[in-house]
Image 1 (cartoon, rainbow, N blue to C red):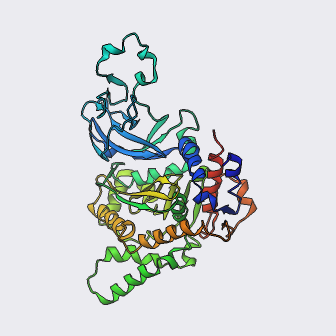
Image 2: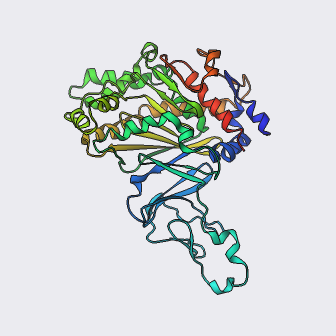
Image 3: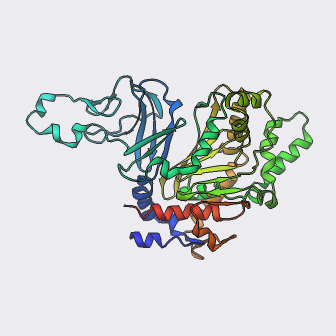
Length: 430
């Protein structure tokens, strides 16, 4: 499919179903959008020591996030420069002082540069020193670390990190400043789910406020009945599940802000997370650490979701991120990571862990509702019938004139249309 045909799949108020189902569109997304955009890789707290690594993906490219002896962090391609063998198969670990290929024992320093090769003499006089393999492992084109969050762009050229994300970075500032020392750390491993659907279904659903009251009806009704029948039931689970029953009016004044490149903050005024019970002593600790004014900003930051397009969705309370790793046109890996604000009460960590199990575990009373629908969309959009996905709700021509839109009604599909305008722009880059 030509680039022009791909771009025609996205109109201002509707999308052609091929955007989700055509393998050629997916291939172009990986080669263009995920190659040129800034993608979340991991958090520096996951690699605290020299030689520590995590393995993951940026688009179709397997990568390693590694810390070297000088405490610098690198994003290296997880493939040997010799014949392309995968260097590391585990999701995390420690490499020691070097990376060693299991196939022919080529070794690399932790920054990716070539350290040694077997039978070095047999390469003399061959011009080996000027070939691509002699340069060592391929690396990401650019890497940026912001408040501990590591992002990378595969392309060596393109828009800079700060220009790409702009003011949405304030959300990471608020998350980090939820710690009295201004730092977060990943709390153990992640919940991983493989969904038989295109990655865009999940990402747009993150900003869909109209679906919870119908899609998750069974979840909040079950919570209501449990609260009525069982005394002493865990109040934490109830305060996290019952808000899924919020009606359309609740979301109509929640507040939204959209940014260029597909980023957004859903819940600038409040969200389903705003009413959580206070943690004893926490507010005083934040005020003492950051001052009254900044503490008020941080404590009031409880968005429903913050999108760092195209790879990450974050929550300010509880401290959770969801990361999308596209696998194929009809398969997506979802990672859910919980953070603990350093120096803060363990109750905040408990809140995050409890929410991730309740809402994102494949066996939760919430996640299966969404995944079932995403997978049904993936199948049904390949059948006969209307080929266009409708995004008309509250469309206004004036929204096309602004790079940043701020409005009250979170039921406005502008927050989803904003993602696809970014998709169209990013897909035009070479």
